Image 1 (tube, rainbow, N blue to C red):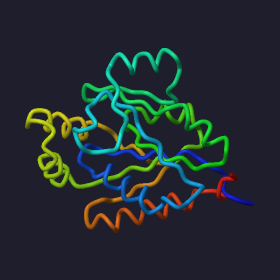
Image 2: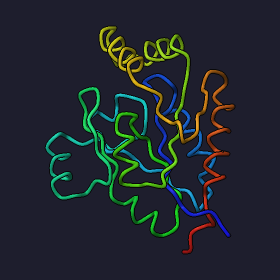
Image 3: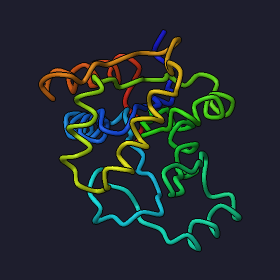
Length: 190
């Protein structure tokens, strides 16, 4: 009996290195026909750095939302985030789909996709601060707000997986790759 396709919902606090880990895993699994990485649609400039996302204006996002073109949506840090309904087609075709999720939206994502695998990326607080400062996207007040939000959030993946990203990117990256591979079914049919 093979592995069923599932949604792998990767989340973690700002600065945990989630975007770097997802980029690493996407590159390593590029030839795996059973795994698809979803892009997020965000009302944030694509040139702002971080993940490879699809930039939408607030009006474009609202239009897609009204037309039910998102499978998952949430708001965080002054931006709207969405994952397109294309993931439903990918899952129905047998793909394992990896998404960049939100810890605050996990309960709703689980309601919509009961079999999803929650994956929490963790890093020590001092590392989160250093990474947020290094990326240079926000001022100190915004960074402090992100760190305060992280401290206030309860644990997010008690029934999922946890990957520590507190050392070499390759170590945590290979842990994510192995986890995705262990939940991927057979290659999709052409």
